[in-house]
Length: 564
Image (tube, rainbow, N blue to C red; front, side, top):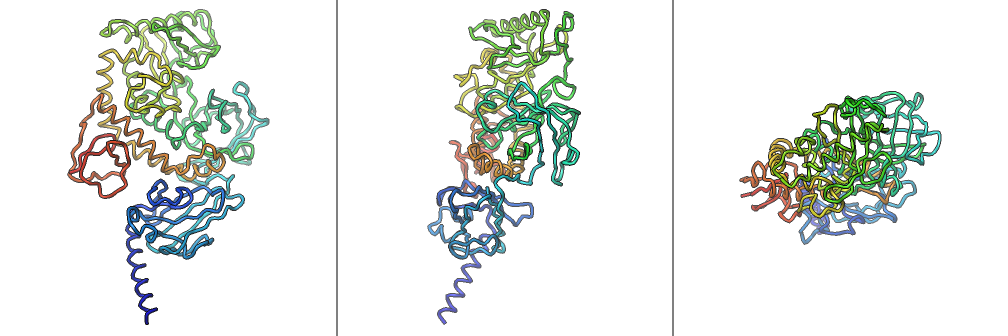
């Protein structure tokens, strides 16, 4: 009789806890990744499109890994360990089955060739499935770019002949290009400076023999494979910087697509196939100036320039009015006649002199620089807290004509975004010297224009950024695991933790800018929590995990919100 009573009690308990689990909003992976902490919520499962399945992909452990799954409601409870979903008994090795509560833990062996596991659970039926992934295999969730070269690529200067094709794997919204049986011709060389020298995961420059439209980008021959090995924020630095450029309506923003790469039969990981900045009707749309041009009328434009932080033979170098040495690399044209060199040097020195005018009510500098484009470019750099923005990889261009101006853009390389204090402007005690912008920021007309554009951006565009970040990280989440297995020294998994840290830094910087520049409504009052998937933060920048949101003052979508 006693056994029947105990059985009935356990059945009721299981049913009641199971019902609670079904209603949960979040589940967390608990195990070797977080040292079996009862408070660490850095490893959330993601709710899938069917609305009932939850999933997380985690790297294989160096040794056998043990884990359980925690409903969000378990955190803060005294009986935390009794509220976890787990295996029916200790040491369970089954890859599918039925979960229970407080019955043990899953054991994932350190199996040869396995780089990661995907765990799927259906709390309503207590079913689970564990899917192992090969350590050298692509994820299967993104198109795969296959490149085969005639020799090893070891130089930034010399192209190597090869072939390529893109297998879209039947994924929605993607199209294959070429095939294994009919690959297309290309040339490959290295690219970058610091990223080429300092990382094992290398970036590459691609030149297709024929114009192509890879993964829906506009037709061209010239693309880059960006490794992002220097980005420890979930591949978000460049991605969000480019999206901000689009939101702020700069004339041209490089397009990119996430892709996994097989290079000479080996898996190279997750890359961003990115448009190469060049003069082109679909990129930097200016008149293309010929190399070694001598016609005085034609040398006034067709300039694609970069404020650079590396000495190059194709540069104009001179001492700024504040004593710093400014290095400007000419990207197009690539070879200059004496007429071209004299024009460019004279124009840049005149621009510098106008910028350092002691009269900050002067408009002389505006005769040389397009202020509206600079304002938009500058706001992108401030939001991204990019301490290297006006120091290197800072592009400018000028079209033909005596009255045309320097236009800042396109944006490029946010590898140093969010690398310093968020509570100051990027030109104040920067980690790298910032050219021109600190002096220009002293002009009241520039300051006023910044505030105008900033408020429009906050009102019309900024609220969409959080969803963009969520969608992108969801898109690449499985590929991040495969990339981390290939390059454990650059591992970005779990992507949710990287995403949330990035959002935290972004929110802090935007809040600082709101304090300095104002906003459409610096503090929004809400009687109840607005319907939004965007995270909530305390004023100190700590992400809130409790629900419902209590009364108080919080940061949400880059604004202060009072919940009453």
